[in-house]
Image: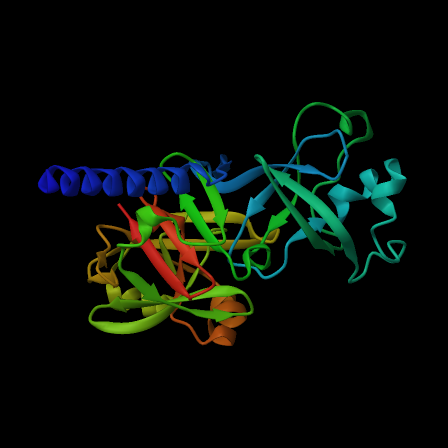
Length: 313
């Protein structure tokens, strides 16, 4: 009898734990994103940008914002948002001194993504973005209006499921991920700096979801240290905040690792004029950047609370 009671108690405990895990998984509010394609240098890039469908305050229109962890501030593009400021007085009231359009903030904006709401102060990026024609201002087509940056996820846990094109934001790490090995990262102005081991040497790389076409990017000299000299790809266009820039791609022939995760065959890119080296890599004192291309078959967990990066294959 005692043995039966013990077995029953054990089964109840297992069942209860299973319910806890299931409820924790189900409690995640998954937010869909859209892989926005683009044609760059005459080449069709299927997964060029991560666009998130967004509703803004009580505005009836549909919008999208790019998920870009390689920048610092969540922002609306001045050219794109300007007609909505004019059309909706309640929206305009949240923006300080918008007549000047210089270094101003929308205060207390509700960004609704999926079933999640984020009450946030959103920066206005003056003079940037596409101007939306008046006749399509209120059409049902979603208008691309801004960028979602890591400041939205401060002290939270961001989970990106690349396979199913969705992400979630949590206060605590869900049970299903607690057994994963984590890589400790640094945070520089909100951006994640990861310790990659490249050809046996540890280097710092910026993790940048805004660089979807690239698995790796660095300076020309550093790219040649891990790849053959033959240029096997090139991309050219307004690829850096509207600025024209040309990238060359090389096949990586050295080992690239992140913790226990080993990178398979990949390419490394460098920009022809060294703009990223001058304006990004040197100021951050990093080897280069790692983009979405490394993780397209994975779920990644970005624990901003504990500065841990985890990968689930």
